[in-house]
Length: 492
Image (cartoon, rainbow, N blue to C red; front, top):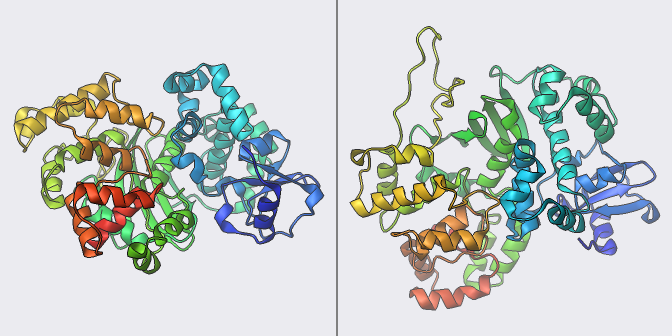
C-alpha cells in the first residue's frame, strides 16, 4: 500500500489521532514503532519509515512503543469497509480464523490459493497472513498477561501460540520484554469478576455519538440476550469455543469492555465482534465530512457528530431480525423474536447458586444466552414461530442455506455474492438484503430508499420521500449512504 511520506510525517508531527490505525511510524534510531499520535518527541525525517500494519513494522525488526501502545490503536477503517479480498482477509484474521484453521483455512474461506493470498497481503500490508496473525496473537497475549492471573503457559495457548517457547520468543521480540516483566510493569491485580473475566479498553477515533448507539440497541434489545442499562450495553455471545458475556460502556476516547469468557481462546474473536457491533473502526471525520456537504444533513451532522452504524456480532442473528422486521414496527418485531429464544436453563444440580450474570461452561452464560444458531432455529417446531407461515418458511430456508454453507454471513464473506444469494431465497427482497448488508456485512454504502422510517426522516428534513426520487438524491451521500440511513432514522 502506497504511503505518502509527507502526509504521514505531517500527521506524526501534529500527533493527529485521526490517523491512528491507518499507518504505523517506525523509528530506526530507537528500533521502535509507534502510533502517529505518540506523545514522544517527533523523530527526525531520516530516521522514520512508515508501515501499513503493525506486522510489517515487526517484520522490519521493530518493537512496539511502550508509551503509545500501537498494538492497541483503533483498527484501520480501510480494512473495515473494503469489500475486496484483502479487506475480507483482515476481518477474518481479526476474528481468529488463522489461529483456528491455519492459513489453508483462511485461503479456502476466501477462495484463493495460499500463495496468491500471501502475495496480495504482502503487497497491501507488507506482511503475510502468518505475520498478521502473529501480531494479533502478541496483542492478545499482552491483554491476558496484564488483566488476568493466568499462568504463562495458559496465556500462551489461550492466545493461540503453538508452544510456550514460541510465546516467549514472540513477546520478547514484539515488546522487548519477557512476559513476566510485562505483568510486573503493569502491577495490576486480576480483574474482579472471577475466572475468565477480562477488562480492556476498545479505542476509537473521536467523535463517537454514544447515545445514538445505545438508543438504537436499547430499542431493539431482546430480553435474555441483551440489555441497555445505566449507559452500558450487555449481551451474550456465541463464540467458536463457547459462550461469553460482554458489557460495553462508552467513555471518553474509548469503550470500556468487560468480557467473561468460557474459553480464553475466544478473546480475539470476542474483541473483534464487539468492535464490529459498535462500528469502532469507522473514520467519522470522513463520513461526517461527506454528509455535511449536503445542506439538508449539515445541521444534523453539526448537532450529532460521530454517528455510527450499529452492526452485528452474528450474521445469522441479523438475518433473522431482518426477516422478522419486514413491514412491521420495531416493537412488534422484538416481541416476535422473543418467542424464538429458548428459556433460560437453571443451574445443574449440585453446581451451587448461579446468580444473574454468573459464568457457566455450558455455552449459556448467565442471562446472556446468545441468539439461537441456524441449527437450533431449524429445530424449532411450527408453534414456536409466532408469525405468518410464509415468514416462518423464509427463516427456515435461510437457516438451511447457512447450515449448508450456501450463505456466508461472516465478516469475511463476499458482499455482492451474499446479497445475490439472499435475494434468491423466497421471501427475501431488496430491503431485507440491504439491511443485512449494512448491519451484518458492514457495507457502508447501503441506501434503504423503500424503508418507511427512512422516507419519514427524509420528509422531515424537506428531502424527496418517494422511493425512486430519494434513491437518486442519495447518490450525493456515496460512499457513506448507510450512515445517512441512520441519521434519517433518527430524524424520523
